[in-house]
Image 1: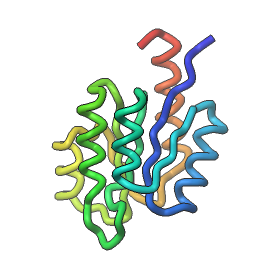
Image 2: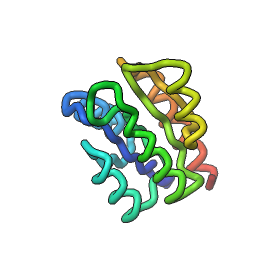
Image 3: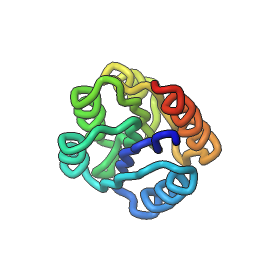
Image 4: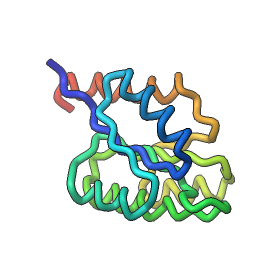
Length: 130
């Protein structure tokens, strides 16, 4: 039996966190939810994740404090796929996220179909032992 993908989901907005979490779990992922940077960094120290989905602006106001979580995820395990999401998307912010180690970038509102496709690909890689 294939290993279920372990996903770290970080967003300060409870509604988004809950809806994305339910969708991911419904698609077979094991989801750890965090609403703030420190909790996410602690989760990254405790456990290994296959995928981290991180809101770039965790404290509101367009400040990209989620970049620190991106960096922490890459330092914790370089094999973790890191996708950032934001409603405050700019080319500069996208560039910064990629420079910090993000492997993907989604604008809010996030397309559930696209997110579930990412998880399906990850499940396929895990089934092959990757």
